[in-house]
Length: 429
Ligand code: AMO
Image 1: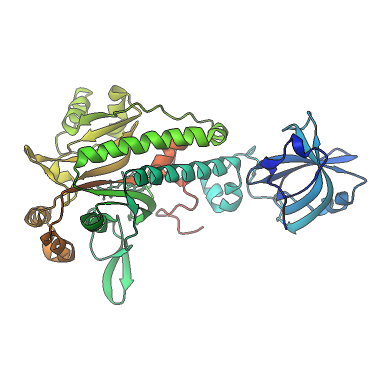
Image 2 (image 1 turned 90 degrees about the vertical axis):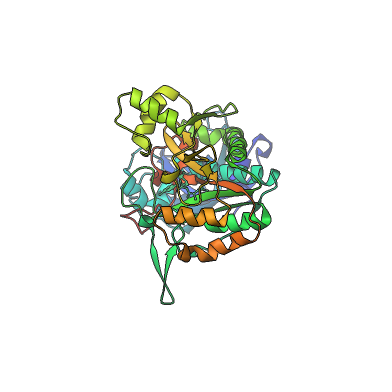
């Protein structure tokens, strides 16, 4: 047995008792007669006192920072110790030695740039900040799932090797597939729609791929997409669902990750429901009034959103009713204004974190929508044919997990929050 307790389980009641701990050497301070070793495991750190007279002392000269070790010793209450508790070592065994010197300071005192951090990602992931990021992510994803379960959704999985683009053709990664053209999925779009046509309420949390040429703090070539599709519903119901999801997620992270938020020195925004909705046309007008040369049909990207938020001043809000032609072919037109679509983006301050819409569910409308966008309906026949069998009205959205994580951690780049980011420059680690 490697351990009897995690470090966080040590408390006053164990005073005088023998425990076995396992973890990494976080720090060592030699004060002549005594050595203070800081041991770290997934739950925290504890001060270990090694007396010169103990058997454990003999092992110390072979110990390097970040070696994996186990320690048997007795728990002592001591107000001078960092957590009011320390362990007096009887025996130390080295489980796996770390090379030294280390290429990255795990204690975080010496800051490293993102390239070094990614190159030395194992050590970087051992830093308390990265542990906090991944814990917050896990709570966020759990919360997302729970809200959906409560609303009668089930989790599904769709193929990631696909035959046709859904989100515009430029960003596809081709794959060799038994002599046929195939691509990595940009989104589960068509499959989640088909599943909603049978199961009604589905969601998927899975990777999506986009061959992003540009190097920005918000784009990855591979990202986790949190996708939802709902039958017999339109974009208004989907936005109400997103409101519940975000409200629960932010409050669950606040409640369950107090320690981690402190490590990151981050305060989560308060969410008051309903979230504000402004139309695309209103957004364009605000931007024009701020002197921007922008017109109906233009995209509202991150630089424009920054400007917009100077006026809007909301943490989370929707921009709704985007121009129909600027959205993908599956997006439904607004019946009272065919230039517009029943669509939305969810914005965190000035960053798009989700987008969604009501979908076309009539075969002829879909065919026309493909044609208008210069796409060939024949290549989509496998999808279109399902619309011959009572496809219900449906709506849904996709949310980028890495971008949500920027909101939840206060970090600046998606490359920091994803353990092993993929971008144009990076295929390893
Ligand atoms: P969209 O293309 O807007 O919509 O993507 C949905 C969300 O995914 C995130 N995202 C990304 N995150 C990191 N790196 C990228 N390269 C990247 N691209 C997108 C964003 C974005 O809001 N099928 C539709 C969704 C739907 O209508 O259901 C879609 O994929 O947070």
